[in-house]
Image (tube, rainbow, N blue to C red; front, side, top):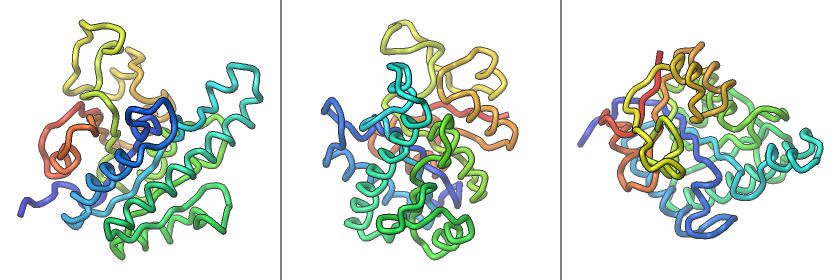
Length: 238
């Protein structure tokens, strides 16, 4: 059996990755597929934590641009991440994986409160932990939450699942001549203002020397390949 290169990882899933062919919401086929991909690394004995975005349901920063109060909009976005987290928890448990959702906003009836020591204990006991509601604070994205939680649980690497092969020098959906970037440093990402994560998340990852891999979740097996040490997607570090 192939041995994993990493023993503890944090997977960041965008809400848009769960849409599938729909215009919004959660695709049942996609959520099952993601659960299968997570299962593929869970079966290697890897400790897996997940942060899910909420952009498939509601994006706070977009709503604030239409005149909504940013704090209210961001709180709505946090609730959207809880919906996605509960859907993913259900899909994972249907695969036989014990899963716990911890929310940064208290809602005891549907999720555990975020308690770091408890999260680490769940991981040690072989459970997947999903961190919902971002950081619990407005003005911070789920990308920043992913870096923060990754550092708190001492993840060895942050894996950002997207719908493209990795990082490009410009948007490949707009520019057909966009160049793929295989490896890059955090400082270069900041200097060139490449839109891979918000600048707060990039700065936090750089400061704490947390390596990041951006990859295409749609290619079956990519997640397992990365965890086993293959060079898939784009790698960002110091």
